[in-house]
Image 1 (cartoon, rainbow, N blue to C red):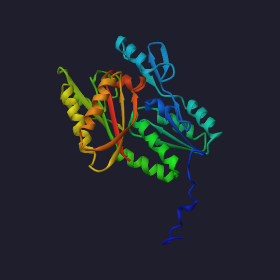
Image 2 (image 1 turned 180 degrees about the horizontal axis):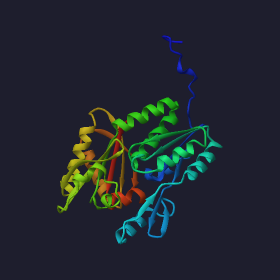
Image 3 (image 1 turned 90 degrees about the vertical axis):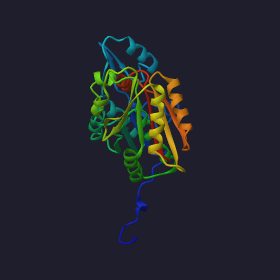
Image 4 (image 1 turned 60 degrees about the horizontal axis):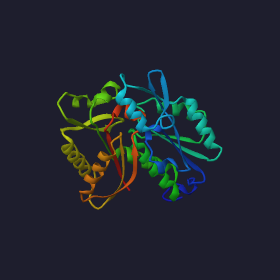
Amino acid sequence: MIGGIMEAKDAVRLDRTNTAVVVDSTADLSQGLAADPNLSMVSLNVHFGEETFTDWVDIQPHEFYQRLKAADRLPTTSQPPAGAFIAEYTRLRSQFEFIFSIHLSAKLSGTFESASVAQAEVDGVTLIDSEMASAAVGLLARQVLEMIDRGTTKEEILAFADTYRREAGRLFLLSTLEYLQKGGRIGRASGLAGSLLNIKPLLTFEDGIVHPYKKVRGESKALAAVQEYFLEKTKPGVRYAVAVAHGDAPDKMEEVIEILHKTDREFRVVLKAEVGSVIGTYAGPGAVALFFVEE
């Protein structure tokens, strides 16, 4: 007992032997992260007319964007059923005592709700709403896995997730708002809509929904705006973990990384990935996502 408060010495230490992490497929994992033995994924679905594909299983990003560009109608997406989460949680609980299930914003998809239904059926599961999407989910999962590598507690992971939601940088550079508008996920970014030629919208997440950050004309000004955002949200002398993802636009992703290197900020790119079919349905081809958090 210290100062009238019981020490947290009885808090269970979480490590690789007793803890697993689950994400949904909108996490847009890098190949290396997807291969982590303590990480597993439950997929959403994308529907082109009567055809249904399991995200990252039946359809990979390059094929998806080719179909998207040729499609007469925007595809639709659907959340995993609760049963898919129940099956995965049950499988993992035969090997691990604790599961952290990390997902895209509950305000963007019913995926978190499906996971919540499953959580009520399987003990040992803790849900985390990232309040973001795409590689933001992947980056959060990666950082949690690093905490587990070092040894941590449930309380420390939940505290980090709370800090992540408040402080992590999050920015989407889109080629167009067309897909976000048609998909009904535009949120408060509708003010960026317009028919002006060569307008590049930049979006962020606030309180779990899409918000506008800025709109600029042309690629060079868009990259300058990305750099401005990065400088605005970071501090000198602090190192940041950076995640980037692209929607069939690897060269544009590299340009974003290059523009970050032209700043005086200290960072390392820990995750480079592709935007998968579910997020790509709304972000469209040519999108680049940038997420970062203090290490």
